[in-house]
Image 1: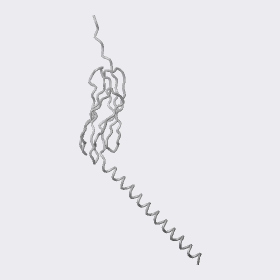
Image 2: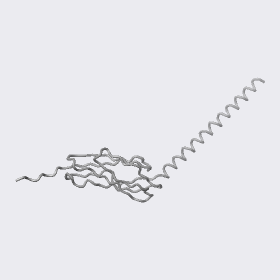
Image 3: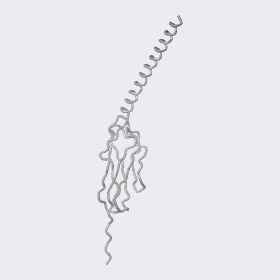
Image 4: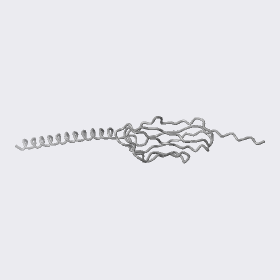
Length: 151
């Protein structure tokens, strides 16, 4: 009789353990799939016409403003919270309002062309888009203007 009681007890424990395990696996699986669908379907998606702007050779003190054009190809508005640059010689101007799905916008970058020589600067766009930190880059070579000859 003692032997039958312990077998029944062990079977109940195994059954309970199996049931709880299956329930946990099902809950975690459903939760992971649901989050994956939500995050990909409900975000804005940046599409830049170009991610690197090459100034080429530019004369000293010329206009250093260039424009990155983008479109929101996602399903939610994109809000740019900040645009960071690698130095104070690069100044960004960006839209403060939300860019709705299908709409376009621009980020203007002004490089200080008073500095002679080659340059390569990174720009980081921080937003609520699918890629929260988008890297852009500018590069070029500032050539010194010839000084007028003194007679």
